[in-house]
Amino acid sequence: MMDDARKAEMHRAMEGNGRVGQRLLSETDAVRVWRIELKPGERVGFHKHVLNYFWTATSAGKSRSHYADGRMLDTEYALGTTRHYSFAKGESMVHDLENIGDTVLSFTTVELIIGSANAPLPLTIKPENG
Image 1 (cartoon, helix red, strand yellow):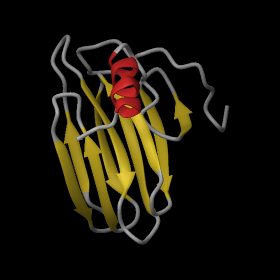
Image 2: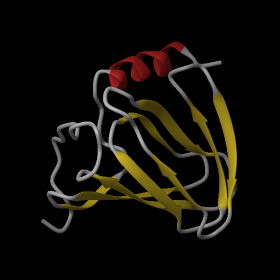
Image 3: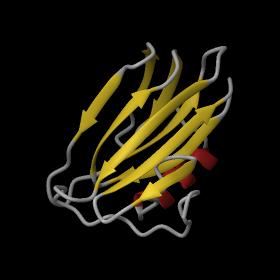
Image 4: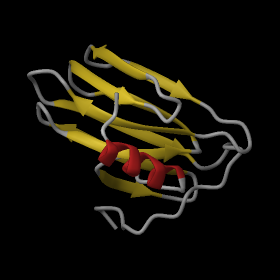
């Protein structure tokens, strides 16, 4: 069950928080590349996925995600675990990510701007290398 603060954060994200990682490493007309690195107990707040994307775990660990549809999912990752997601026109996914393990949990996420049915959400941040 989510507390009221997380519910409010989730509802704001449903309006379009496209910051799907902690650090935007690179952005081109074709892709956005993100980095997530969470110490035990840290989390990435609710965000909205509208673009086709994939992530790869760059460390082993455990996470918990809360989803806008009410699900909560605990996941265990091995180094190199990779998942791919795609969204039809108008589809999206809103969730958060919390490190519930006892090691640093890290991911690289690549959003595919070209080939996605939806336009990218606007960002108010610049890539670290640009």
